[in-house]
Amino acid sequence: MSAFVVGLDVGGTSMKGGAVTRDGVVLHTERRPTPRADGPDAVVAAIRTFILDLSRVSPGGTELAGVGLCVPGLVTPDAALFSANIGWRDVPASAFAPEGVPVRLGHDVRTGGLAEAVIGAGRGVSDFLFLPIGTGIAGACVLNGSPYAGATGWGGEIGHTPVYPDGEPCACGQRGCLETYASAASVARRYASRTGRTAPTEEIAARAATGDDKDATEVWTDAVQALSLSLATYTLLLDPSLIVIGGGLAESGPLLLTPLADRLSTHLAFRPAPPLRPAALGPQAGMLGAALLGWHIAGHPDIGTTWTPDVPNTAPVP
Amino acid sequence: MSAFVVGLDVGGTSMKGGAVTRDGVVLHTERRPTPRADGPDAVVAAIRTFILDLSRVSPGGTELAGVGLCVPGLVTPDAALFSANIGWRDVPASAFAPEGVPVRLGHDVRTGGLAEAVIGAGRGVSDFLFLPIGTGIAGACVLNGSPYAGATGWGGEIGHTPVYPDGEPCACGQRGCLETYASAASVARRYASRTGRTAPTEEIAARAATGDDKDATEVWTDAVQALSLSLATYTLLLDPSLIVIGGGLAESGPLLLTPLADRLSTHLAFRPAPPLRPAALGPQAGMLGAALLGWHIAGHPDIGTTWTPDVPNTAPVP
Image (tube, rainbow over all chains, first blue to last red; front, side, top):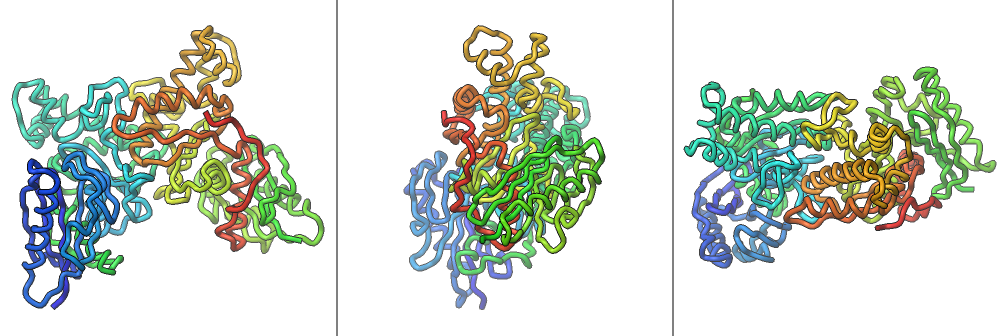
């Protein structure tokens, strides 16, 4: 029997775990709540238990070769340094896994970016932006084949780059951040503040497309315009081969990507725009990236090139 | 006698050449005009002659080990693919150097960034932005120790990132580009259009500092504000250890760097700003970077760590 690793994606509200073989077969997946309200120690304990349970799901005789975890906040391969969201500080990787099992940590967005790079929409492309757009916006800058962390681990915070210097106030304390206009949460919030009605972003996108709902059109156009300006800046700075859009907002598919590609082109005077592509791994990107990290620490740094993970595509290429 | 290389920095108006030993001793430097008006073939011929002449300046018995050239436009290590400025297309590296001498090409800004990284203000720092601010603005993103070219060689075009989406028109055809507010040429142009008087940027900076010249204050403040917004975006995206400012505008020293550091901090809500430092190599950065490339192609990829080039510092650290 072949060995397997456990990959775990630790989010603020839920944890997604999987047991993944060396060939990329996902033996088992499971989702559990993150007991954030009970404090950081309870979260660490819940992760330990989750990993232990996942390590037992595989048929007898198989071996747990490693554990990979992706977590929010500031992280090194060996420690979860800080997360405002979860509240922990300086938790060593060894706190999460059974004794003697090698474990590696990764940053949540960059680990998703790693999965998209190796087995997802960026397969075969060494330089691209992975941009999941959900409650917030952060990106993974994949450069020379690897997600780039920056000098202190704070790279990729595109959501708080100033798109409109005197724009609307952002929760971060600044004004005009990308996230204020273009996150899924902001699109919903801005639509609700105009209409008094809450609606999922897919519905807002669909209403915007018909042209019958002026508020939907304005909110959606603002989101697309803010994103296109940010992506123009990214393109001019880092010249990516590709931009991979994921997260909740990407579920609108061509209603997002078609106008976004159009606007992006208009902002680039002297160079072509890189193609936009929907993320391939959806909400499984973090878990699969964590599984790749688990295999890396188990001694297989080049793993994944032959994997064909069985995950649904989120949207067609526009 | 030790061997030497020729390093040549090919600009739109002049070429700076040097003969540099393996220990970083600059045996000879020379500046010649770029005969751009005579067409691209004349420029190639002038470069050939310049290199040949420089290869003879060294005392008898020394050997020309290699040639490095930094050129504008789109470039690979082996060919100058395109320069709108000079007008050439697909010129192989071998066209520039004497037969049998290894030659390597580099992009002008990234080659300057290489020199600042190895022997200049970024020595010992693996992740920083080198931002020379002259007639135009382009940057070298030094990532993991090397200037990053991007997927197609167009990386670093920070001068045309949209700082003010509905701002003043830029020569590139877009609006509100960083370069439109903050290049040395734009500062001079914007001051002249307000006052009818031309003045060097150092004078405009000095006038802005006294507070007696409202036009100077406005123009300088606009430049600093645009730069600070761009550097905030860069910092949030790529988390550099350091930002190195060079070019003509940096000659104003603390009159630029002190308010710029101050404004940059105010744009960063949840993280500290990286320090700003003036470039160390001034107008010699391109030639010295080209000499490093010459030594690289001559088989010494790790050269430069012990070099202490004798170049004047441009400005004190603020």
